[in-house]
Image 1 (tube, one colour):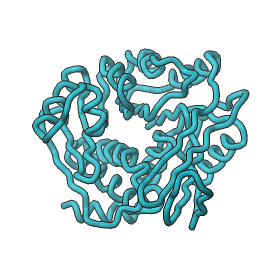
Image 2 (cartoon, one colour; image 1 turned 60 degrees about the vertical axis):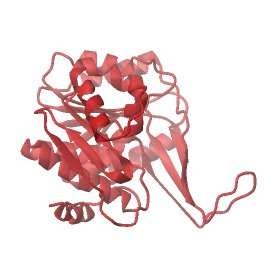
Image 3 (cartoon, one colour; image 1 turned 180 degrees about the horizontal axis):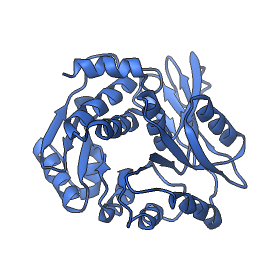
Length: 301
């Protein structure tokens, strides 16, 4: 079983405008909302690929109920914990000349409620995959991911961590199967000016020395690089299609990589499928759909 952990899920409300001008009333040309959260995005794309997963995390209030109902409608299995107070966050995505985001903080999570999540994770078995994705709410301590990983450290499970800065660095001692920093995050981690692929390879090697098995470095519009557990480097580009939105593209890449690796055990195949999923989301309204994923997958041969 694949478990995705989203500690701070959301409703993502996207508003499209011809132009956005600060300080005045702006009017949209269209708007839409969808369930958000990095781990949830991974589960939704896994579902498109026919791979089952279970969403773990917290929901609260009327927005939390909407998240639960939306996942049920999409056939995604959940085991979410309902918080006693607050509401699950609503994030604002503005689409005009540039993309802008306003992400909310989310509800308070008590120690008692967090321990309920740890109890659920005790049910993870050898051979399972646990994906920790995204930020943590302000009300949880900075060692939250470490506490989760410590609980499972004696089990033979695949750990995926898609997070930034200390959340990522502090997870490396648990030898995650996959991490996915982008180029900017890599620069921030090592306080370095990364200029070229040589620099990226050097710092990816450092992350592997610190414990990571496979490292994907996202380069945005320039594609991505995979430094796999066997010491091989794989490169992927971006197809020349109109980019509609980049939200969820990285999560889609993680989903594709895990689905591909579960199927074949081949990092090269997994990276190709991950690249197809990331591209498909960037070229779509919302997350990638199966048809678009495999259309792109075939073009990447």
